[in-house]
Figure (cartoon, each protein chain N blue to C red):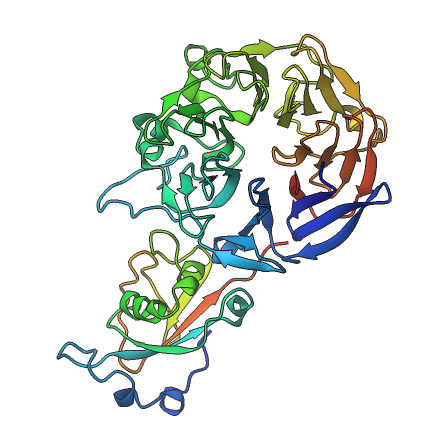
Length: 366
Length: 117
């Protein structure tokens, strides 16, 4: 159990700690700067923070004993001379890191390995705690990669990375939009997963094309890795065969649209979501901010609202802004309007820590 | 829009700095001034470097300060969006290959637009 949250916001990284049973802001780093994501490496306790300086580009920092140090950021390889590639919208695709959108530690048997997902879709791997990065060329050069597209962002983005707890060489990644991909050899080769995912924004003949899927978030149960949950652009999906096939879960109140999903570390049937009305209207229904929870693999859902604002709440919760700790009891989430809520009882009730933070991009237990 | 530059007063005696970097041709050394805004993130002191184009000058300048390179140039070594480079007060035209010519008396200003909410 951890008593520290790292909250990445548009205007800095905030450290929120539990004291005498209450959570409070204990400090801020990079104040004024845009922090998009953090990772706490469970193998050595080091923290990583991704910054987006806009004009000055995307940077990566790693914690030291008392501070942070800038380390190498992933850099795309040189685009071959004369090679032309356009994005979904017909504009030249720049091979350059536009955002760090996923950070994941490798397995316990490969200390120093860090995976990093980016916009416009490149996956990078470090073997030296982020001191240097190498693009995973097999995925970038895969012919189907050119079918990845932009969705909410103009560029495709690799946002979810799941390292198989049974075998560190097996890694799943998810792309918005570009589906779910699996490597079984540490990135040397990749296969497209996700049969059964459905994209209602595509023409009927392409609706079930696995590469056309806008996966918003992919979560894997550590104790039962065959179970995966997907919050998709137009629905909730669950897999019981480690992502090869998915079933769609419909008729979830108040909606099936949202960005994040987390799954209980030991109970694969328990997962949490934060719904918005729908893709074309991304606000909580009726101004009521709620969390939904299933305890039976998606057969039924509870709507959790105790402690959450139930009037004129227009909070959006991004895909990395819902966190679950390793006990499976504590949850925390942060919103685009600067609200931060924590639950100590699996979401049965929530306490607002603050509602005045800058827009929140990511929440992680440290 | 012309950046203030009094080249004759601020240039160092280039003959003492890098006497043999001209490959036998005309010596090209330019002065490079970085925006103050970047200094909060990475030290970018004023520098002088040789080169006949903006690319060559910046490559040489960043050789001694590789961390700063990524703040000005993107992964393909093009000028980052919203960054601006001026050579003797004129905004460069080639933001991709940075082929704009530089003379041995040029001053290069590396600026950026400050925007956002």
